Length: 300
Image (cartoon, rainbow, N blue to C red; front, side):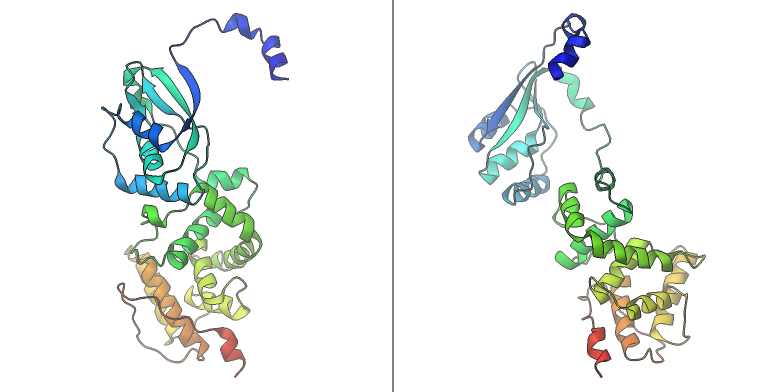
């Protein structure tokens, strides 16, 4: 079918221009990678962190043969692909990768200037609703639950706490039903107040942290309390609400790790009947508090 298309376009006549570029699909073994790296004389400084991240991806089977090429210039100098080659050499694994030769020696300045597809783009292309929130929530679950991060800022992702687009897509395919249900319920809460100081993804993660994959109505009532929709003055939930609200009004951002720790503490108070609490604290160097389970209190 493709040959017929090219014939209809008079392809042979309209593409007479010759190119200095040549492309071969090469099975790059660690030995081949080391050989290619011997021609690496003018590339950017290597990043050991990036190499180790790629090694981890390769060993986990998450490094995909996606067609991204290794590039040499017309003097056989390596222009692009040093980190992938280093990772192959270090991992002991082999991959089929296109190798382009004959590029202009100043072509390096044009690499990595395009906009990479984000996880939001990938989720949208695969038909997922709420792609932006879904992506952020997936990262939060991985960052704080799986990796146990204490990073002071929600966006402070280092490479070991970062999911690839494929990992996010796989997670969403497996967990979409319950994640979307949490997002839907939290969105209804988020849309009510005029002043919004936590996003849907953040609130959804708090709900997930204290209520699991199927938060009870009590969990959502708790979220309403710390979001200021329903408040009881002088309680832990009201104290946390005031902290969050004032940070928004005064433009003094709070660490999400702190917010998460304080939310768990406020939830534990809430389970005890939301008693009068004038003050409580959580420090950034502490481990997250243990989450008390609603089921244990419901049986009392």
